[in-house]
Amino acid sequence: MTLSADPLGALVAALIFLILLSAFFSAAEIGLMTLNRYRLRSQAEAGHRGARLARKLLERPDRLLGVILLGNNFANIAASFVASLITLQIYGERALAVAAALLTFVVLVFSEVAPKTLAALNPERVAYPAAYVLRPLLLTFYPLVWLTNIIANGTLRLFGISVRKKTPTEITAEELRALVREADVLIPEAHQDMLLAILDLEKITVDDIMVPRNRIEGVNLDADWDEIVNQLTGSRYTNLPVYRGSLDNVVGVIHVRLVLNLMREGRLERESLQAAVAEPYFIPQGTTLNTQLLNFKEAKRRIGLVVDEYGDIQGLVSLDEILEEIVGDFTTRALGKIEDVTPQADGSYLVRGTVNLRDLNRKLDWRLPTEESHTLNGLILEYLEDIPEAGTSLMLNGYQIEILRTRGTAVEVARVRPARPGAPA
Image (tube, rainbow, N blue to C red):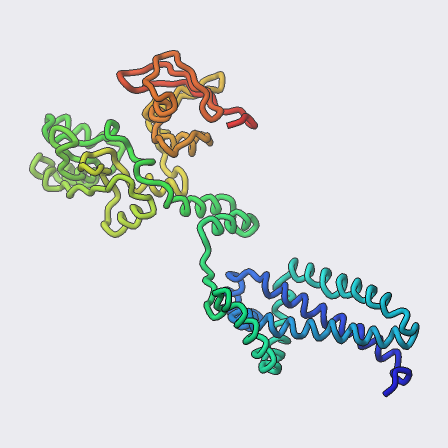
């Protein structure tokens, strides 16, 4: 068949078809490779046929890319050949260079940039229909795809890369945090905060949230009986440590409800009280909250005493405090005791040195550093590397702190002025 005998209309139609075919393969490549793997797995398990086909294709990306690139290159080379035939028929050999440049521009715009952009913006709408076409193409041209992959994979093996190793689809904690933050439409903000707080449990230890030893409220079995009864019936806590003389001689933990039951039955005595005391539960210092949450569940406990490497009691941690790290405050209790933080008319706050920094940050939306210290007193001493006198002022992370009163080696009360919005930390 001579060039002059080729019908011009058929050649133009073939050229348009080949450009569209190239666009299809380009869009299919980007659409399949940019699919959200977790959404794809969910839809495939829900029975979506297009998702199942796409997931099957993505199990061997080397074969998928092989059939896509074979089709794409075939379409581009064939389009170049047909464009040359059209140019020779109309303008002759002198216009071949111009035709090549024009075809390159058309392929770049309509077969590469435009379809790939569309696929990147709507990967599922492109990838799932494309999977219906690519799957039979892969089966049909499998010998050619196999030969191509053998050569390509052999080259990769020279660099120590094996395509047969399935890339794990594990997601890091930071990636999961980013996914949660980006799901603002699907997940309410309050639920996002809870999910992020759960991820942060592995960074927080019991030392960060425990009630320090000097603030633990417990029952001294060596005290007068009336004093013990008054303490048990007037306590705002449901579980209390029980000790003899001091916390160094801890006996166990008592549930106030059991005491009330004994009182109702008229059997509340020292002997019955001691019999109702449960064994103490100890928590090693430095235990992360996610680990301790599981330990509480396994041990069927709600309260534990934090001990250091020498077995000395450092503080107390309850299940409620761990849960509040996730859901926020769900009790009616104030920040520590009500007098621990007192707002002032000028916008400052009078804060006791024993107040926990994480409580301050969470409840007042502050940004005081918590990496090295757990209390305001500890933070001030760490920053100054000395025991300050009353009247000392310092600027810490944008917060103006003035020491108002000290006691012994500790800061008792300080005035804190919150950082101004936009102020440098």
